Image 1: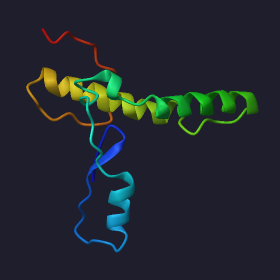
Image 2: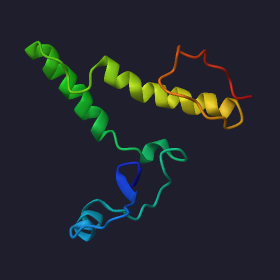
Image 3: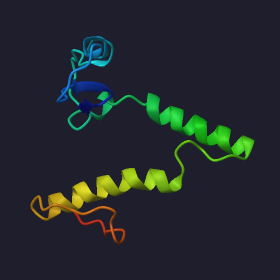
Length: 108
């Protein structure tokens, strides 16, 4: 399975299921007039970010943990940092979790 932006781009598994077509119809690739997030940042929906912010505020008000806490959010940041590190080293694989936070270097 591959997800691009907020839509399924590929839905292929070794063993198909009877509801695969319904899933593809409901969540599948849609036509876009603009680019993807990498080419057109305006093409990225803010909806999921907004849900995370709302949940964080709700958790603070109730004195409970948010659905995505710091350690869980760090995993996403580590993936992004690993992508940058790999790009800076000519595409070499990067093992996760990172042993330390990398120093950000320019691409130039």
